[in-house]
Image (cartoon, rainbow, N blue to C red; front, side, top):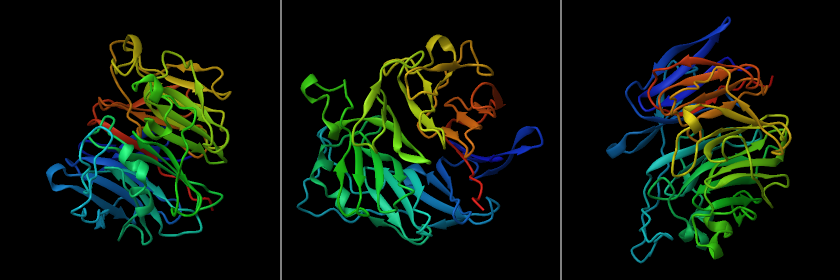
Amino acid sequence: MSDTLLVSTRKGLFEVRRHGSGWSVDRASFLGDNVTLALADVRDGSWYAALDHGHFGAKLHRSEDDGASWVEIGTPEYPPKPDDEDDVGADGRSIPWALKLIWSLAPGGADRPGELWAGTIPGGLFRSRDHGETWELIESLWRHPDRKRWFGGGADFPGIHSVLVDPRDSSRMLVAVSCGGVWETTDDGQTWTVRADGMRANFMPPEQAGDPVIQDPHRMVACPANFDQLWVQHHCGIWRSRDGARSWVEVEEAGPSTFGFAVAVHPKDGDTAYFVPGISDQLRVPEDGRVVVTRTHDGGRSFDVLRKGLPQEHAYDIVFRHALDIDQTGQRLALGSTTGNLWITEDAGDNFEQIRGHLPPIYAVHFVPLSPS
């Protein structure tokens, strides 16, 4: 089991570690700064932290000593926008060719040491081949004609928040875009195919609701043991795929609601997945002020509503898309909320423990994976 959790917050990156029978916050890095995301690369042990300095832009840092020290590295950079380029999204907004936010980080395949992927707002996908020192924009996706049909969901501009590299084939990858659907490459990013058939965007006119290019997945995950089994927490519900994203089937009922932002899938059992529901798009708080986690063991046919150890009265926590994570064993699950609450379960969700209740707003949680050796 992983004994280290990286917690990215509005005011720093916190390392939460298990000592004996309890968890504690051991160290804060970038205290006072907005840390939006952190990644621990199991291939070489490097840690990465993405920061949003607002007016001063996004930055990336790397640690090679488990967070004891950090060095600033390269940041994804968009090319200059051609003078004759008319880049307007589906919502009528002009798309800036400038980095606004690093919204996802993912390691490349085990056979590609040093390769990293970054999904960004305003919708660009970047690759680094040198541990984040330099980055290149994946022009084939950025210049795909359907990209101009994307638009912003909660953000002003579209963004890539989920990047999944197929562990069986490093040249195959899936990315999820809000709002722009799910996209697949099987040739190392040279060409792309939209893979959101079966999803439904009920915020669009009925004749456009099934358009795969304008879907709003909030988060997409794949089972590491079977990459063809995927889950999406969508703006309009929950969807799952058993065929590597070629088709999606809606899960119509899942406890209190199917609205939310986060999803986690068991590392070995693709039929087991976790969600943290809110009431609806219009009312983004837990139902009846009770924080719960919903769990399915049978691919979405039925759900358990897990609440032991979670607040059940006047609790209005929402869990963002990267603020739910599961460790390599599938037994430890962590979730962090917008109100700075952090919970961990060590028995697959049957019992939760509050680790801290006064952290800054939590954007992401990430278990540091154990080396496969």
